[in-house]
Image 1 (cartoon, chains in turn purple, red):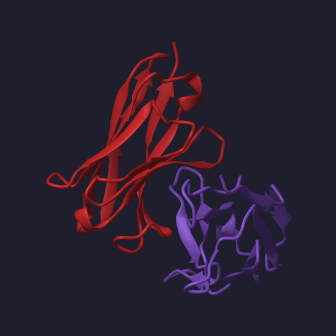
Image 2 (spheres, rainbow over the protein chains, first blue to last red):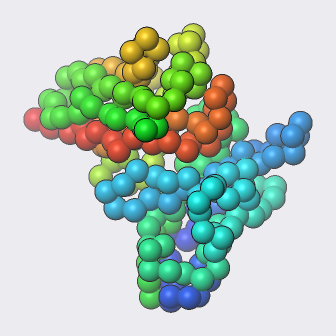
Length: 113
Length: 121
């Protein structure tokens, strides 16, 4: 199975500051035919299902604020929130959808400092 | 409205069985692969299984192989998860999820609100 490892497990950032969450895949999730990374990011708030933020590693889902961005290459990926807002407090997960099982990272809990 | 609604969760004893349902509406259910994901209390997301549009192909995570079976009824726009030989560690919220693009297993843009399964004596 492809193991997705996120870091850190917990992150506290001041309002208006940048938050950076990392995700590493245990093997390549790049499909050479379309040159796309099969990597998504989700946000989950308490009592709610996950919400899609980013797909293809860097494409923002419609309606997601532009302070959220995704990047990465090889087996290392990053979710960045450029200016943290109070409503961004949540747990964030990366997921690879290249292989079955479609494994998730263990999650990163983001709070306000 | 495009939505997924899970049902069928509840309290079950270890070794027991339960069948979850996921009712789809607002989109062409038969055009989409469908997935189940679970989340134990206070824990992360775990992908469980997927089923092809016509039900002809199924892939399972090792943790549920031989115990859980996914199926679908496209005439009823409903996805199912039959869970047998339940264990304490199967206690979780179970979500059904739909990929964003029909016919693919790409990123999930539609999730149900989940149904809680509690395995306890």
